[in-house]
Image (cartoon, rainbow, N blue to C red):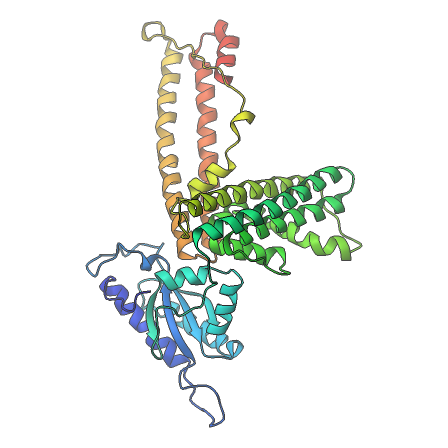
Length: 431
């Protein structure tokens, strides 16, 4: 944790000072009773987390005025009576954002008491521990140590590995068993299928948690297990990264209750098929991340593996080599320059334009990936934010553009080939 923010750009320093002063003033108790437990300020600490806690900032850094991806993510730790102070803080933050006095908006997704935060940490909600490690203190009502929060005690790497491996070998096969049970009911009983899929997803998240914190999360619903797991590895949210995916997660979580307690419960074949796909992807991703954890522990490290999270998802969801059909290498016949007709010359020009058109969407995909990565760090415990959804939608749109360009190129290839060679050409392109 940093106890000063003088290393940040000058305009950021000014904004943070103003934010802290404004929030403390707005939450002061003006009509304090001698029997009231409130102190003059209900705020104990304010911590900055997210993009401005990275190491590349200096006081001389110049920020672009049109930059929209930055924001001030703050954690506010209050004295007590959270339900009383929460609406006051929300109004104060809204006033800050509407004042026009800040360079970037303020986001306070975490407003809590220290006792509740410590309890969440003991139950495996490790995002707060990450904020404590990387965060910047911008206000404190009194002395504060580097160990503000009380995380779960961890054994050494060797002992952690042995315990985690035992837990995984017991817990993950049970998740697979539930998934096999769902497959056996598929086409026979929708209710039983949905129920078994929910159990499989819950057990998969439970496996992930027990491997990382060596403690079974007790009696938690699916959405809480997901929140706990994503607080440790935000890349787990990629399984549900989209509006349709989130809707399907809602159907999956709802099934656990409605299958048993609602006589009107029903689900379509289409939704069930989607649920199967998402749960299977969750299995692959959790198994892959747990293996990365095991490798790190065997190497003697208790820290989270320093890997690109999009790369982790790509590796986890990549089909097994045995499942991939072997594609023969073929050469697409292409007319020589001397034998091209006017129509082929025109088609060749279209092909060149189409290939050039791919460059823009592909570079945008790279930019979107960077933004998604920064959002996962920015909102470490809330990776599925509205901004995340927006970037995911942009991602889907750019992929559609690339697919359209690919279709154009296939059509142009057909125009470039002699008519009598069309069947052979089409087979080559398909291959």
